[in-house]
Image (cartoon, rainbow, N blue to C red; front, side):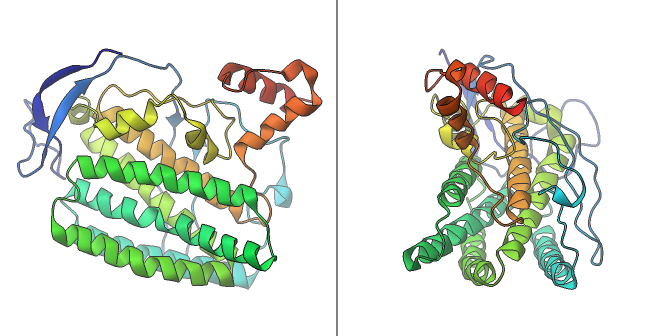
Length: 340
């Protein structure tokens, strides 16, 4: 792969869109980013359709509508209360848990809006530092339960690790863009993450459903934040190069863990395209939507399943024998198994 390097360019944008459309000037005060150009590497693209409805304090959680371009992983369509993606338990306990989670999420959003209203990359750095903490907490509690012999949820541990691995690379991208350049931002992010970890551990031990819903709220906010950022600065982002951390992650030959956290999707069905900084943020936004769907599925006990477990069809269908890394063969195999 040939990579052409151009002179360093500014790597950040001001929070407010330029009043005059010609010609845009990047805001000062951000770290330079080494320019890279990369040709198209894949034709698959996710297309999202967002219905921007912000939750009010007494409103139930809203959905992140997503229009899938790839085969879904559900074995059969479900209706009514049997759909694991739709909470069937509408008891006062569930409503109380969700109300508390929405209140806590709105409180954190108010703080972030006040501190980072005009500093996008610093805000993203704080968001990504916080967003990966719940997965550490889930894995810690699951390991503890497994040690005591109470639970053994191997798929949960594997998926949550893949989610934390994805969020780690989001964080590396924001660091390369200069989001952690000020010590106060690093302090605030890590201070919040420290207490958030122990809060999530306690919440997860008390009610896994509540902990997963809270994480869903956080991921939904991350999705809407990136989506708004793309709509405001899309044209400017298309003229900026992709960070090296994004190229190393999204264009890696081994994307097993990338497929693993997308539990509602067939493995190998999503392969990102990275030509510029706009593509990077599109993929980060789409990652957050996949996290949101996974966290919602987890709220039904025992519903989570590793996406790669669909390869079990190879054991029962001799016509589905494919090489281990043959993505097209795996997708065809899964499609065939889902239509039986």
